[in-house]
Image (tube, rainbow, N blue to C red; front, top):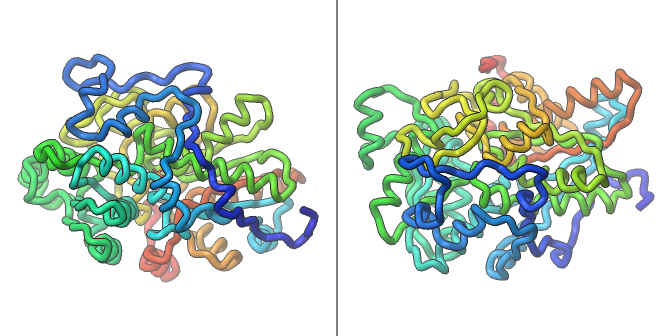
Length: 438
Ligand SMILES: *Cc1c(COP(=O)(O)O)cnc(C)c1O
């Protein structure tokens, strides 16, 4: 395409990916297996059966390169996929940069983030396994609302534990979960043993994802008809998100652009980063590209840049398997920054492995720099990004400025993981000068 003003590429539904891409098949060194918390032996499928349905357990350990997306899931993806891809011409102009900036936008999904890409297949594989109820945790509420939507599609009930600080400061998200028919409670709650124990010890706690996971896991383990569902971190979640990166590669090609020089995505548990970057890592490994992939994490929860690479628990009560990951420890309670989706102590084992093997880089971004970037982006492109996505945009703007100073014009791709329409109170706080850095 040679239109010098071209601003977007919208694929039609026939160009949607038909398979998820499993990076494990192409990794030069195999990632460390998850371990049983009691025996410290590699997990066997039976260990996960109380928590997850067989379809997802199989994906968690799969080494197949391509895994077919079931028709029932593909049909629901059609509601918002393929997602749009833009050349950020007005952002480039606003920055006065010589870089070419593109972004992939996941905010047009039913709940305004990439989370539905995994919520829908998770609900589907539970449904076909005969489960009738899902339990989960949510931070800012994006995952909770995505799962509330997905369970409703497949006729399952859904109980959600939301980190208390977010439950109270972002009420619109639980209104959204309730609109889709789910129940949402603030965590730690009185409904579980884990929640009651934490509240007794720390009556004023603002909660954490680690605590909310403990509650949701306990609730699922006690109900034979229920499964637990996790919105990030695990291999099967990363797998589902790879529709993002597959589409992005195609869309970049339709812009007649060579391989990207840089790819920026925000990283909380690592799922949107995995989703957009794993297909790019494949291009790098096969010698077709040399894209520098940069995980942008918040300074308030810098698991990659300041954590330790070790076996650790995913939750506070130590109910989850041991995962080999960069972690700040399951008792870490980050400051209640606005990017609630990034307030997690660990990082997806596959993303951690890639970072350890130097297949990706990482930087930490403060809250003020993130919001400053978000406002510049909103004013230029007309899309208010999610608080989390602002970290990726800030990383890209840093690079655009450095490239401009160096007289270079690289291709920079940003993963904009969600919409910030429900984060507007955080923007208001930033604009009034009342926001703290972290
Ligand atoms: C949940 C969320 C994140 C962080 O989760 P990851 O698993 O790291 O992707 C980032 N952006 C948005 C919009 C989210 O909803």
